[in-house]
Length: 65
Image (tube, rainbow, N blue to C red; front, side):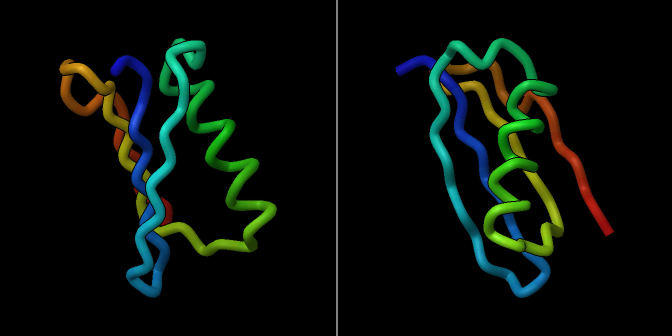
């Protein structure tokens, strides 16, 4: 499976995982999608981890305080 696995953790310790298709070509596009999600969910995000599925390791890690 190609694509991206996005793990969002909010300040309360809730974890949300999203799978995004490989059409999202870079971490910035994925971060934009995640921020759109967080605006809709009114989430207070503590951290975002983005991994490329099928190998490649962590592409982008962001912390928001």
